[in-house]
Image (cartoon, rainbow, N blue to C red; front, top):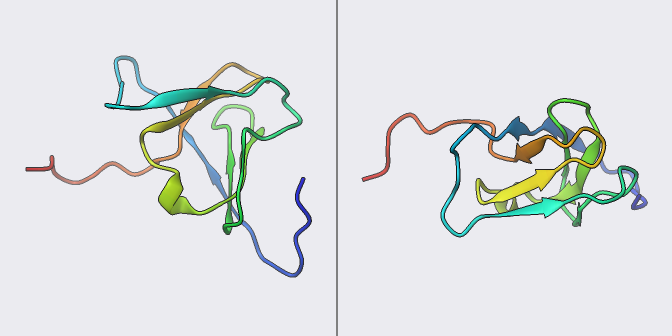
Length: 92
């Protein structure tokens, strides 16, 4: 894991992908080693698997973790998506 010097990291549990939920131009990153996050960044947020709590994305900027980014957990095989909130209304 990356060394963190005096920074406070926020942890967010990702959301499980619903059946039939396929975003345009989206992709699924496959975590091969449960001890190694798929993504590493320089942001303030760590993203965890919704089912088992495994670290999937470390030190990420939330602007890069959109509904197009999905990660399959190596520990429990759950496909997670970073967006945990649903928009109130459909876009026009």
